[in-house]
Amino acid sequence: MKDVQIYGAGLSGLTAAINLAREGHDVTVYEKERQIGGSQKCHPSVHMTPLHFQKMNEFIGINVEPFFSELNSFKAYIYSKIARFSPKNLFVTERGPKKSSLNYRLYQTALENGVNFEFSHPLTPNMIKSLNDESIIATGGYSSLCKHLKLRHVPFIHFDSHKKSQKMDNYCLAYFDTYLVGYGYIAAKDGLVSAQVGFLLSQPYEKYLQKFKKRLKETENLEFSEWSLVMDNYPEKTNLFKKLYGKTFILAGTISGFIDPFFGFGVNSALISGKIAAMTVVSKKRGIQEFKRFTTELNRMFLLSRVYDFLPMRNIIIPRLFKNTTNSIPLIGKNLQNIPGFTHDDCFKIQSIQDER
Image (cartoon, rainbow, N blue to C red):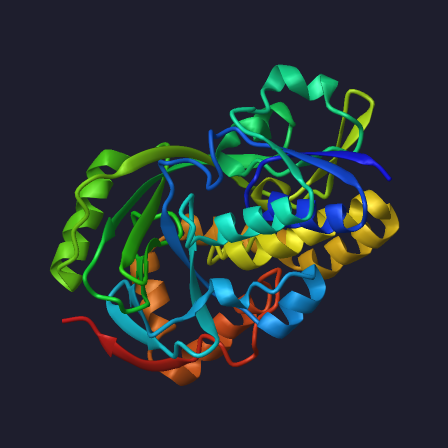
C-alpha cells in the first residue's frame, strides 16, 4: 500500500483517487479551491461530450451514466454555414460545486471509498520541489503550473458565463469565426446554460467578446449578463510523466495534454486520464501502454489545431468544406476518431447544412 498525493480535485484527479483508494492505497487529494467544483469563474457550467457509457464504465470502474443527460439538439454556425448535427450518442453534464454536478457525484464516491481531502491547498511553484515521488498532478490548464513544470504550452484567455433558464432543453451551440480561437461554445442542461469563448493574448479580446455577444443576440436571441476572464494554458504535446528535481511526477487531465485539441472535449478524456494515472501508480509499464493507446494521434492533432488557428482566409476555405453532408462528414469523422476517450462511430452525423441568411 502506498501513500498517494493527488493535486487537483477535478474529474481526472477524482477518478484517479477513487481507483487508487479501491486498490487499498491511502489517498489524499489537495485542492486549490475552498470546495469541490473548481474555479467559480468557470463553474457552474454545462459540457457536451460524445460518450460510450459501457466502454467508459468498464474502463474506469465507475458508472458515470446517471450523471449525464441526452442531448436534444446541436447546431453549429460555421462561418457562412449553419450545420445541424444529430444528437445521437451526444450527452451533457453539469460541472461545478452543486450536488447535481458530475464533480460532486465523483467527490461523494471518493469519500465513500475513504479518500481524504484538503481544500484551500494550492500547489504553488515553491512546493514542487517538496512533492513526493510519483505524486499525481491534475491541476488543469489554468493553474499556471505549465510554466513552472516546464511543459510546452500556449497561453490564452477565455471568457465564461452562465445563467438560469426556464427552458429545460438540453442543447448545444457552436460558433466558428476568424476572430475565435477554436470556437465559441454554449451548452444547456436542465435549465442551466453556460458559455465559453476563447482568444489569443495578442488579440483585442475585450472587443472580440463584444462581437461574440452581439452574434449570440442576433442568431439565437441569447444574452449573458456577466462574463469572467480566465487566464489559461493549452498544452502543445502529451506528457504522462514530468521529471524534475530528481523526482517523477504523474500528470493527468488537461495539464498532461490528454485532451482533444480541435473540439476541446475534456470530460471524456479527463475520466480516462484519471484512470490511467491511477494505473501508472500501480504499474508504470501498464500506465505507459494505456497512455500511448489513447494519445497516438494527439500530438499530430495539436499541430493541426495550431495550423487551423492561423490559417489564412478561413472564412472562405472552411465553408467550402461544408457544401453538403457528404463532403463534410468524412472530414469531421476523421478528427473525432482522435478524441482520447470512448465514442460511438455514428456520433456527430450532420443532418443538414444551409447558408446563413
